[in-house]
Length: 130
Image: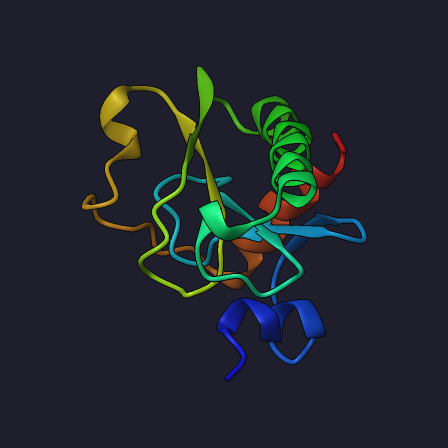
């Protein structure tokens, strides 16, 4: 059964896509820890990050760097943190979260409630720096 991320990749479900290439896609998390929180996902459906083969694994991290640098330019923050949790969706993914303090990366924190207009505006800002 296709994951929610596979459905986003195929276009079955909408998302605020930041960028994509032949191997990866980046889009805004709809339940973000911070404004600009993005997910980087391989287009190939693989459950566990450490099951991703070497070249794709390297591509995911290189792609994440490109997205993180754009987030940092578009969203006021000290740095962009990276996390791989892998429990929420059975499809490998990297979280990129704008940070002001260490506690900003706590996934137990309440998630932001953003309107569709706010998500669209944030995505457009980040895309400007890709």
